[in-house]
Length: 164
Image 1 (cartoon, rainbow, N blue to C red):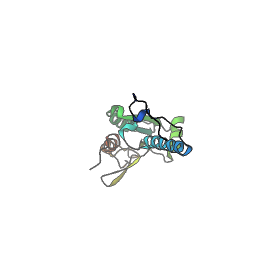
Image 2: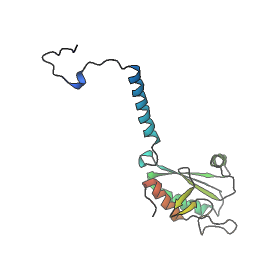
Image 3: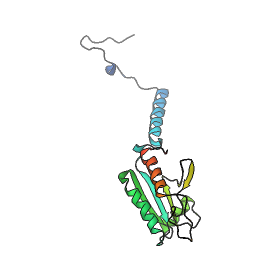
């Protein structure tokens, strides 16, 4: 039997009497909230996720420093959109970072962007490993990347710019 309304009270959807949720309704609501929270936390690659993380690990040797400084200078141009962390192979932090990333080769420099060091640019695979092209020492070969490649990838991940 429907409840009678008082004469002076108009019907309103938010003033209807509430009954306790049943167990299935409660579980459904809980699952819905959990899925919304999970979707919000696991959405990938958007600017709202925070700054892009660039990690540079290198040997602290004179021939390597200019390449690290050039890459660090480029990263600084992105301001708050990109965060930079640097490590040296010959420190405890650098040693554990290299182990985490699976770096076993003796290489002068490796650059990771959001945990990756290998990217596809204009139908070619570029790995930010060793010196940039033209920056090698003769004893250590140049890598297959340039500072422009680094800029292209940073533009792509920081601002969702696709490569041409």
